[in-house]
Image (tube, rainbow, N blue to C red; front, side):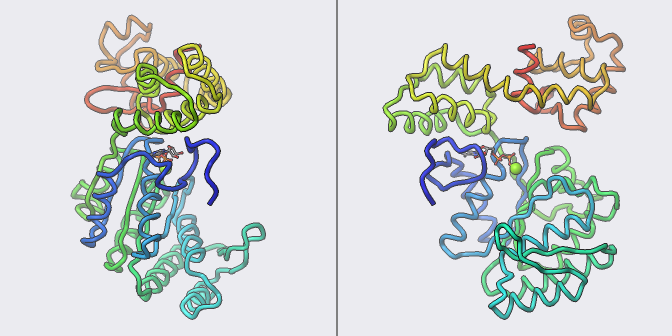
Length: 373
Ligand SMILES: Nc1ncnc2c1ncn2[C@@H]1O[C@H](COP(=O)(O)OP(=O)(O)O)[C@@H](O)[C@H]1O
Ligand SMILES: [Mg+2]
């Protein structure tokens, strides 16, 4: 793969050289893998869950220690959709028409009513299902599992945005997935998700199918010192300067949300000049402006009162008691009970997160936008 022209990668994963730290997390994932444990990774959006899994997979594949399958459930709303994504991920990895085991799996999927074709753009094998009945979904998952069992190398399946299955219309999605993973104890799973509370509940509530079935890890922000070293090294290599106080300002403004640190650094680096306060301010404003059209559409998703509550929290940055008289009066919010109701919805919809007894916006850039308008 060619080296990127800007070292601050904004989408996906490139290689270890452009990936900052996460040594502890990598070692933890290694340990779970070596000891046949399933792992759960949870953190707010854009902290680096997906990139970390790709980083781990990069090493496993490079050292030929395992076959890795990456499945993203974002945007799926039913078991047949999840199944389709799973089948596609597997077929793309193993569906080599020229080897016996790949052939067997493709034949098995066809027998369940799937059509196997080639993606016209990438040329990769692709599965299409017609109208599938729930029983067929289970049979298809079963068949995929039995196929994976036959592979000689260990198989690790990452299921990203796993909390999505709790949104499926069928109540049974968690149970179906759980019994599937139980049936194939030699396949390792990594579940990851951005709804922290939901992920925790799914794996620690005694009444839920996945109770006690995996080790949990909460992904925290990258340490400031490590991130500063990482950033400065790239600037220095390009004969550019960025001072320590400026880095602190970036971290503060981005609240250490990884993606935004990357985004600001990518833009600053792109200017190819010594970074000063003025340039930083300009880049910050440009970044907020670019997202403004998207952010303003959020208003239509919420009632007027929910919107005003969200804005009040954004202006305050973090709020411990959003129903206190002081807060209500300051932002003219009226009744405490209405704020509680609005907050419940904002948390459920992931606009607001509740952590360490405080409420704050999930998306740092949305917060900065509210502070500007
Ligand atoms: N350790 C890291 N070093 C450098 N960039 C990172 C790191 N972790 C994440 N990123 C970048 O931040 C962005 C957001 O990360 P991502 O893994 O998509 O977050 P999440 O899955 O938690 O929403 C990605 O574009 C990725 O390139
Ligand atoms: Mg992700």
